[in-house]
Image (cartoon, rainbow over all chains, first blue to last red; front, side):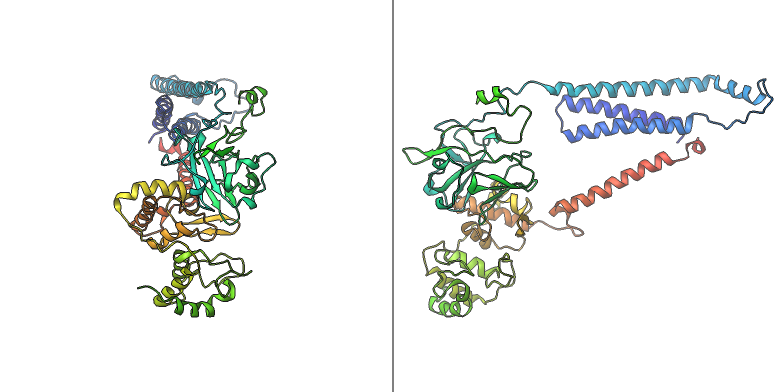
Length: 282
Length: 217
């Protein structure tokens, strides 16, 4: 392949990559596909510039004689060649292609600005858990403390919100005498049943790995380890905050019900977690 | 065939009592067996985890069973007679319940055993074993008793537990076309593939950039 064709091909790939990036963003494709589009756009542009510089720009070594002031015959012929019509039209074509590729890529990079809104409001501070809501398992069955087996772990949701990611909660049963919860939470663990948010406070993975003998919850993503008996305090790994504990009690019919929402925001930390307005809104 | 508890007691006193106590009450070396039931004894004996052969405090791992089938039946009958506990389950493996079994497996089992049931480390030196050779009965027993670090899943309804067993059987029946089993996907083989593909791409870029474009012109 000749150098001008290689440049044109690389620029065309860059333009197609940019267009694909825009299309995938607008129609909501996966972030991995967007990354491939961006890679094609930037890679094509870079390849074109490299081939252009190496293959198309003349850099002959000219040794100027000490006393030669008038234009030499050879220089004059080079100047004539540069003015040749075929050369100029090709250079103009490639230049326009380069400018077009750059412009489309720039336009594509403006798109992420549309992802900056809208504001999440209080969504990050609150979940659907409310006072009096029954804890139900994934099959929508309400649970009694007696039905929960010692050393078992069950993923529960508030009744009517089964499958809502931010409400997923782990219900674990331990011996009540083993518990050493922070003060004020003793009543939140009826008959040794204790519930924590299943969303890791480090990066938001589901904390699904329970080591029953040591009473430790591990996050499979980055091995953050939480002590279930001591209010899910992190004892290892990157998570810095305990998993929020769900306050709960047993209702008159014997089922486990929530006493309210989690006392603190679930999941990973975010920019205004300690914002006074945020605290008030909860 | 039911085992003979009296015959089991004789073997128990000879081979098990030094750690679990003369009447299975447990000692400093081994836990109480009262209430583990036939399911607990059958699981530990048939997977070779008991008698324990490792270093003190180490995790019991699968090895060939130490006893023949009649002896295991006798021991199981004796341990079951020590106290009320789960009996040996009889899971129904059905193709129709594989999809629901997959959902349950991903939600409850995959964090430790991995999505393809090939096992993994669970921290603190403990290991969630691969389920490639576990029989349906052993998988069902493990859910009932929660051996070692594993939590107990006997709270799941029978139908859901059978669905999980069906899904594990489905995973075990997956054909292996040979070669390196990257289908068992894990971070190591995945990373290996990423390196090979990534380095290949970089090589292509190097060839393109290093090509003598003047001569090609």
